[in-house]
Length: 322
Image 1 (cartoon, helix red, strand yellow):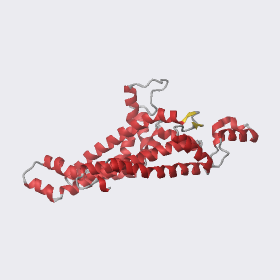
Image 2: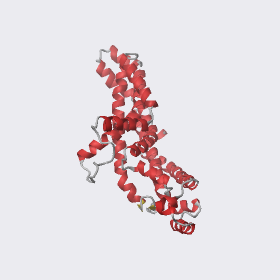
Image 3: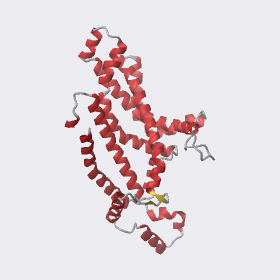
């Protein structure tokens, strides 16, 4: 396990370098002007000389390769730079928002895995039944629905129509104090929408895996020995059928991050994803590079976690050979 982790960490280094370089290159080619984004409305009445002077002070008049190298060497020393759009150090921006994004993604991911497992098992028990057709049809419909559409529909239904949940934010309007009850109430909609966007994949994978396991000889043998259906399903078929789901965990991390970006934007959730949107539109090089690096590291960590879980649960897989 330690050897696999160390090998993946070494492989991640050049990938992170390429990603950060690409961020600076794409941002440099962006049509957005970081100087005008930084100055705001004051840039409308400023002359070209003032804008050029501000561009020089911000360092955006230099080639992007020089800016990337300066940021990289400073980041290796622990200094992620200063965010122009947030007007504070990048490390502080990430520190303030990482907790809320982690909470949102963790709750949504756990809910999607648990509910997807239950629905997948119910559908796989009797293939072709009314339950199976209803679950799979709903999964395919949700799979095709854009996450921002689900988010807007949830706001319309639960916040505007029924008025049972807040439409967004972390606290109530006019309050800056975060309480457990208030946080839970504001978390329900964004976490629920993000979970629903991930739910179809887990449901369909579990249904397929458990359905295939129920048709295997070991499970048939367990039934022939007189074991109860509950024991056969939970003790034999479910364990074998969940193995493909473990590989899905790592592959769903990029989709989870993309979904979180849209969900946080719709619900005004003060997380990392919403900061990414602001950094991209303002061409905030240091913040954008740091957030992209963080997202890439999360994807790599998700893939590593999936491989480790697969190797620990499936005795046929040797971690040393991965």
